[in-house]
Amino acid sequence: MLFDILLFVLGLIFILISAEVFTNGVEALGHRLKLSTNFTGSVLAAVGTALPETILPIIAVLFFAEGKGHEIGVGAILGAPFMLATLAFPLIGITVLLGYFLLRKRDLELHIETIGFRRDMVFFLFAYSIALFIVPFENHTLRIFTALFLVGLYVLYVMLTLKGKSNEMDAVEKLYFSPNNPHPHIIIIITQVVVALIVMISGAHMFVSGIEKISLHFGFPALLFSLIVAPIATELPEKANSIYWIFRKKDSLAIGNVSGAMVFQSTLPVSFGIVFTEWNITGLALVSGIFAIMAGFLALTLSYVEKRLIPFGLTIGGIFYIVYLYLAVKEFV
Image (cartoon, rainbow, N blue to C red; front, side, top):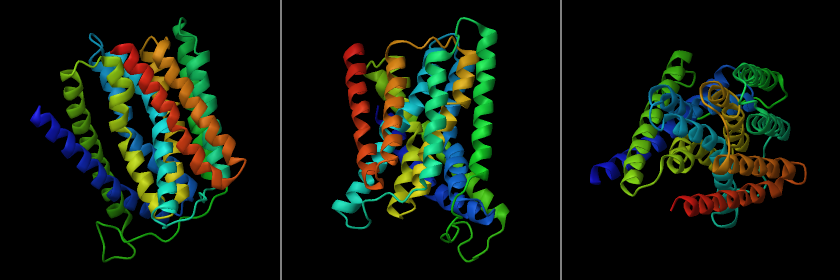
């Protein structure tokens, strides 16, 4: 048990350190390639930090199919957007509120590019609704076409984000891998991003492994672990990155990192689940998806009302996580 706790703590430290190095590298890469803030946050950062939670269900389904692999895989696929909507977004909201009311280090309004944010949320709500309610799980051929449609939807999203109007990346801090060079070579920048990702994924796996063994020690079932415990760990990169960016007043990057990951998680990993699992979503799994959609819809609605209300709306979304945690524990305990 002591070793598992140590593994858990070391994994958390690796994730937090690599998240700082990763955000620094992604900012430098976006600035070097002259990419927009929206594309850098919603695509580059989002896809990069989504890798840990994307790898987990693939490994579970393909290599542990004889046991609880499919159950863990589906739970992890659905758990990712659920955690992003009901935990990552609220953490951003809480960080803004703390920065404004207690630390006095920022203003209350979230300075985001609302067009990009709304595009992210609309794509997420549309794709995830299809995945939850429209997938013809009894017909494998139609499921394949549905999965291909969702993949095409993400490709369309990337194209629209790349072409959409957005501010250019601001001047960035010195690259950690080349602090004395104001214009580091792009190979050095990419190397920093890749190394940070490797450390981040390794840390996430250490974190998950530690929590898994601890949770199994206390008798937690596989679905509860896959829906709640594992996604908390694998979503840490997005959470850590966004908190760093919020404190540095780079709100568009912080929000885009989460909302872009929600689009990614509701299309590509879901497509994998639709094809390679039974994908008959019922019970708590379905509830988690409905809560994620409700939290996302709340954030989207408030973006049309007042920017100063968005942090409160994001924070309120955490209620869905608390309610779900209560329902899950009540059912399994």
